[in-house]
Every structure is written in structure tokens, then in C-alpha cells.
Amino acid sequence: MPRRLGIEDARAIVRSRQQLLDIDGSTAALRGALADGALLRLQRDAYVFADAFRDLWPEGRHLVRVVAAHGLMTGSSAVISHRSAAVLHGLAQPEAGEWPVETTTIPGVRMSGRQGLRRHADHLADQDVVEIGGIRCTSLDRTVFDVARTCSVELGVSCADAAARRESVNGREYSSELQRRWRDRLLERAATSPGRRGVARAQYVLSFADGRAELPGESLTRVQLARLGFRVFELQVPVAGPNGRDYFVDIALPEQKTFWEFDGETKYIDDGLRNGRELSRVLLEEKRREDWIRGVTQWRVTRGGWRDIATPDALRARLQAFGVPVPSTSRPSFGEIT
Image (tube, rainbow, N blue to C red; front, side, top):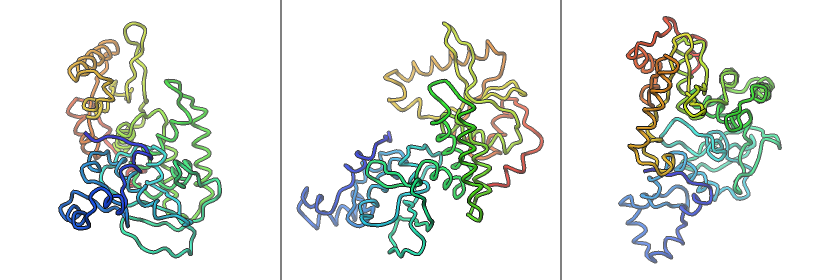
């Protein structure tokens, strides 16, 4: 099962050539481990053991790559930015796979090319640069803006939702005023950045962001619902439960009297998220919760995972299979921005 890790954990995984030689003492053994795939070279003089590396979540693997790249950036004006900075800030990302470590440096500065790096040339204000765990990176606001304008809508909304949540949600308390202030601040940044690539996309993403979304799966679901033409949906909707406790449902579609729950596998197979409970217990509690919500509200409760929200058509098929009416026309303004 992949696991998460912090910056210090990532540093502990990365080994220099000398550290590896100290373990085995043989250059031939080092070459052999690289040849048979037991050892991976991430950057010059930065290696990881393949088994430990592959046991990580995608964000964890990328964090290790960031640490490896940062080790070669001493004295450089470059800072970690874009998706890589989003990982440092702890913004969950829905897109798996591997991607290059992204940095931003002053225009005109010559940098030698290195595999696994993607460099951006741009000016960064002093307030746009922070330090996390000893690594210089773009600030949270600047990172969200850069991801929103240069990455997919799905990724941009996921990161923007997570950032908005930090300012507008405290426990179960949500402040629309704090979210409005966050959005206005980010949109002002976009408005004062004419000519930059993707500013129109960023403005749309930032306007669409909602801090009530708890996880990337909820963010991506909202994107696809909007593309399908749904105009009205509510997030983290409370339903009065037994014993005076509320149940919270991911997304409500009031016009269709339907609740949508994103059903990722992680909450069932991750021991940490199960809080020590057996899987059978988790499934039983989830069934009782859903039965209560359906019985009290008389609404449908529909569920779907990553495969069901991968595209608008996939989500349409899932909803229609459960008898949920889908708008006959899509939302062009959203669908045109990819």
C-alpha cells in the first residue's frame, strides 16, 4: 500500500553515491543495482531504492524528486514552483503518474539542462517566495495561480479548492465571506497579470473554486457536473442523523433530489483512514449511514469512483444508470476550457 511522507522523510530516502558506497563499498554493486532496477537515479548524485520509492503515493514520489533536485540548486536563483510547489504546500492532486520537477527562475538567467526538470522564466515578487522545510518555493497564492493557468482545469480546481478550504473552513464551519476574500485576492492577481499564458483559464478556475470540497475526487466531480450542464449543486450538505449528529454528504443536486458521494478506494484500504477498524466494520457503518440518509430525505444516494468521473461522458453514464436526469445541453463555457 503506498504511503505518504513529509520532507524529512523524503530526505531520508534520497542517497548520495558516497552513502551507497559506504553501505556496500563496491562500485560494481552500485552499477549492478542500477542495471537491474533495484536502484533508481533521480538526479546527479541522488539515488533511491526502487522498492521504497514505488511504495509511495504519486505526491510522495514527486516530493522525493523535489528533494533530489533541490540538492543541486544551492546558490541558484531558481525556486520550486507550479505543481511541484503544490506538493510542497500539501495540495492534493487528482492526476497520478510522474511529472518533472518544476522551477521558476529570473528571465535571462542561463541554466544547464537536467533530466527530470521543467524550468519557467518569470519574475517573482518577494512575497511570492517562501521557504518550506528548507526549500524555497512559490507562495501558496502564487502556486495556485500558476497551477490554475498552466495545468488542466481538473488539476487547477483541485488545488484551488484545497487552498480556499484553508482560509474558509474551520472544522465543519464554513465562511462564505472568507472564501469571497480569498477569491477576490486571487482574481486581483489574475487581473493584474495581462499577457500571461492561461490567465483566462485561471480566472475561470478561481471563480469556480470552493473550499467546501474536501478531496480531489469531489473537485473533479464538480468539474464534470458543470461540463454536463448542471447549474445547481451544493457541497458538504448536512443531514440530521441519529443521536443528534449530522451526516455530511459530498454533493447535493437539489433539482434532481439526488446526493452524490465520491467513493474512492482509499478510505476502505488505507489503514490510517480506517482508524484501526476492520474493513467489514467500515462497510457496515457506511451502509447504515446511506440507509439513514436515503430514508430521512427520500432522495437518491448515488456513488462513483475515479473511473466514473474521468470524463463527462463517464459521469453521465453513471448518473443515467441510476435514473438521474442529466441536462440535455452541456455548459459550453466550461467545456471549452481544458
